Length: 471
Ligand SMILES: *Cc1c(COP(=O)(O)O)cnc(C)c1O
Image (cartoon, rainbow, N blue to C red; front, side, top):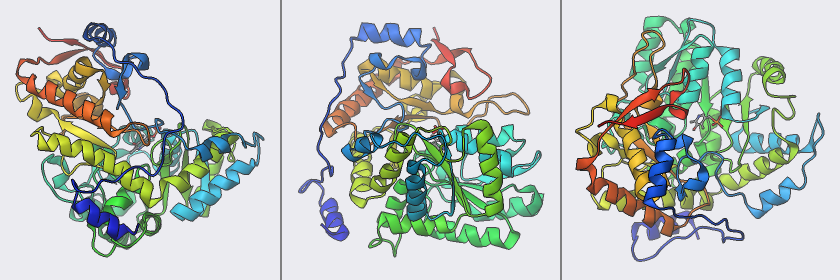
């Protein structure tokens, strides 16, 4: 079916349905527990869903990271791993896949996204420099800070408003960026850290027009642009659907053009690239490549495996090809939209427009009676688990952490519970169960109390912090 025929059907939703371009060959049993069991489990986990055992979870929407189902072709690829220490054939397949889909010249493999973030931050940031970007991401900013930089948010203001319906809430505010450059001087800007579909804003995309204009602006000041390509395929889908001139272009063509406005990218392959582990860094500058290829051997592994087994690189090379297919991205995002639309229809407050990789519940509007320093989104995440065994994740004040200079909590405008949908894993019936549980928690919202933090780790506290219920 042509893209436009598919879209026409989509517009008539309700009359004709779409379905995933695959069928299920293998299943893994999951179990519903009792409310009493879940009460015990969440208390043991300090009201932090990262500390639950997966056996105690029914539908796991903690993250879309490393949780995808691989295809039969990817599993076949796992059997053709060339586990040579140096020069594995699978590395060259991976290099070819990244070149052909993303268009960057040089590839450095890493064990996952944060390995790539570590290397690029160490290579490009000098102490005291600033890294502007379209909203922070937890591990990205952490590595920028550890390299001596400080992150400056230059996303458009609409991104901070969960009900603003703008189609490209991931865009960079070019005016804000230019005044920052003029105020600080171009030499203080390490590079621009651009993310495709902004995770912390609720999976919101960047337009092609914005990427093009960003490139022009940065060229005028001699500043480089590096892309967090983790969910770039989903970003490309939104460009295809929403930006004029792109309706008839393939996701592949859109990704290629978009990446062409940047100087390189880092990738958590555990997301869009459909593998359970893996990452990479790809750049166009041969000198930078030389430095990165030298750094990778210290922290990750030799430059032809970077912490991955040969078989993992093969599955990743195949996953890149499958992940960029129009049919795949359309049904992947379509499933997220399906869940989001159910909640919207029931009047439940979520971030709109619905993002690419998950549905983000607006905890401020669930619990207007719980102040932000009593962790409304952490509370909502725990309540949802208690209701049905559905596991989400906090994306609010806990994730935002503390200001390294003052030590005070950072109070983000968005206080969200994220329900991230793994790719090719759950069915529409699972989405119905999730929606009904969210509704049950929403209906009981008036009686819900907040939490207090009783243990706080120094770095990336959301992963391991512990909480207790307030009386
Ligand atoms: C997951 C993620 C990362 C970090 O990648 P890991 O593979 O988890 O180390 C970086 N950026 C974004 C936007 C992500 O979602």
